[in-house]
Length: 86
Image 1 (spheres, rainbow, N blue to C red):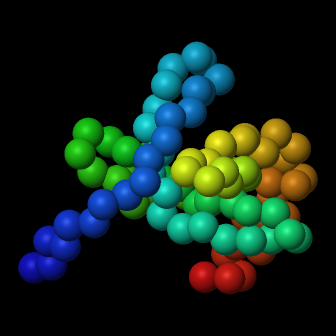
Image 2 (image 1 turned 90 degrees about the horizontal axis):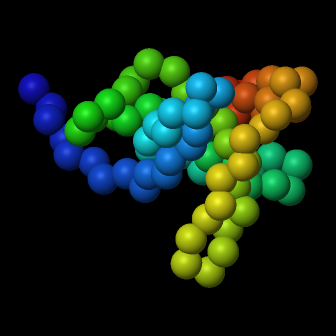
Image 3 (image 1 turned 120 degrees about the horizontal axis):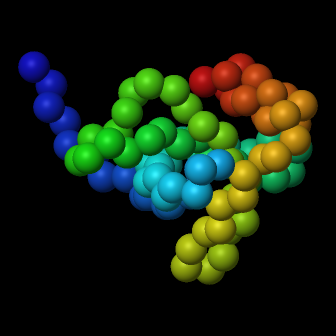
């Protein structure tokens, strides 16, 4: 049994209902000269293996800022490009 411990960078986003949820960065990638992360929901002390969410990021010297991709057509293009990369 493989119980490998992995440490993730996490961030918090707000849902449409105004709730805060913690997300873990599972991958980072570039598409059309912009930076993105693939993230998964943190549930308690574990990272969900159900689903993946894509966010645009702006990287600073010591941190990064996460931005939701609000245009559904753009999101679909970026998600499809990511799926082709993995």
